[in-house]
Image (cartoon, rainbow, N blue to C red; front, side, top):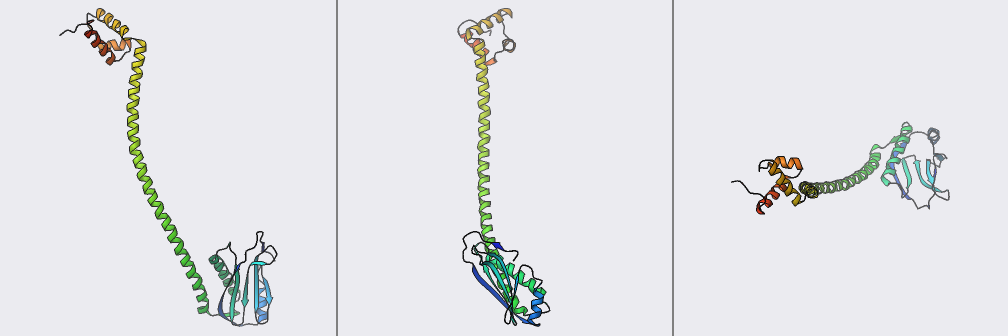
Length: 246
């Protein structure tokens, strides 16, 4: 039959299950058989008092039916017997077969009087199982979501902490860079003029500018920092090379 699948792995025994509801047949068995000819991918079997609709979805490695269903159209009831394999959800399987049965009932609308109370009992049992399953899943998902929110909050706190720490590090880094640049300039000045060489430059400047020195102009001319020139001037005064005018 078309629609079947072959099980390639080692077969595990499927679970058998069933559901049943009351329904009164209003036509002959032969008429039922005629109506069922329109059902695809199914084998219709004429039994003593009933009609069986066999649908095989897959077979095991030996070719025996593995995942299948049998719908019995009895004179006073309709019964579904089916298997559920380990890789398929029981609830999903139940819903699929309930839908399948409902589609068959649509074809039999003029052939059976279905006891709605009995049918609704079956439907209610399935829906209750689904509700419990959905509630359980919701609680698990919500618990996981709640845990993720807590983790997110903790991470945000850590980010804020790292942000504050990073700001301090950035500030310290700027100060270090400024200090580095200052030291680099000082090294550059020392490489350009030793203290003795700079003292000679100061003496020349003083002689050429009427015993006066404009520190800003001097620094600009010789490209040295004012702090170093001031240090040299103080040294020259201490050592008697220059005199301050009071």
